[in-house]
Amino acid sequence: MNYTLKSDHNTAVLNKFYEFINATTEDNGMNAFWGDSKYFKHPEDDFLDVIKNAKNHKMTLLSINNIDDHRSLVKVAWIKNNNNFGNLYAVYNFIAFNNKNEIIFENVLDRNTKDFKTFNVNEIKYVIHQDHELNRKTARKMVTFNKKMALFFEEDIMKFTYLLSKDMKQFKEIRGFDFDSMMVDQNQIGGETFPADNLIFAGNDSEFYPHEVVHLYTYQHFHKIHKIVDEGLATYFGGSKGIKFEDHILKLKEHLNEKDLNVYEELFNKSEHYILDDTTSLWYTIGALLCDITLKKYGKEGLFNLMNSGKTNDELLLSLEKIFKIKKADLDGFIKSELKNY
Ligand SMILES: [Zn+2]
Image 1 (cartoon, rainbow, N blue to C red):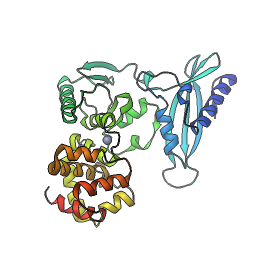
Image 2 (cartoon, rainbow, N blue to C red):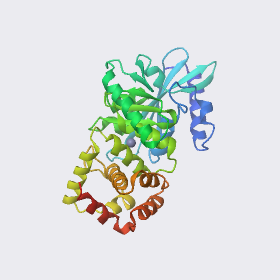
Image 3 (spheres, rainbow, N blue to C red):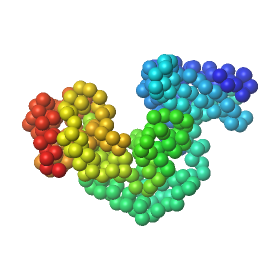
Image 4 (cartoon, rainbow, N blue to C red):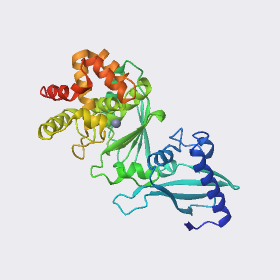
């Protein structure tokens, strides 16, 4: 470990850190450790997400370095102890604020975006990295899309904050990551939404990222949506990874013609993360296809039924059985035959 603060300060930070880590297993009172954030209701969420997802990696405190008299930067890594490829899960930074030896943790996002520019365009608050000039025309396209979604879902137009970054690497960096898998993705176009905070991170260097806006509406109004339908609908309306729904579907069609792949087995019994290439995943594309077929055959009412299926695989499969009147064993054949229409 790397100590650059006076040891008594470090001890206080370390003690608080261990207290926090022990408390994460109890799943309550997390907020008490963290100071307010301009953007997050729960500034600890990124940190807790890594802890949850990096279960078979060992959390390692890399360093505590002072920023000024009161603040130090705490750096944590999650590493697997074997010699296989991909041992590092993430490296994450947060601030420890020392107020007369009372330690409060802070998310680094506020600090890292203090030089970003802010613009309000109708319901959208744009927070934009320094090298980007606001393009009002593109911003208006986003405003129009937002209105279109409100009309479709028959709900109020949503207000949100849109953090415009160059790429995924940048929006992860400003949130405190030195490393995670998204940051080293070949395709750096991507987005992430914190729907409870009405906050979108767009990593496409553009004012327009429709996919993430759909997630704001589904989170708010469809509490029982399955993730395949959620990602599918976002892809149906807003594309994904910078590619339109129609083009994803053509790739899917080609892929299924070439490969001997059972869609039902792959999605529900094997890995849902099956990908066709670095922009198209089975999960998103099949989800989008199911939304499109449902809308064409049964209209918005059918789609809303699908969106209210429930979050488990069994609930989604039951819902598909009811809507399309097919058994789950027939799902693969059903999808392949429907694909002939595209
Ligand atoms: Zn999505």
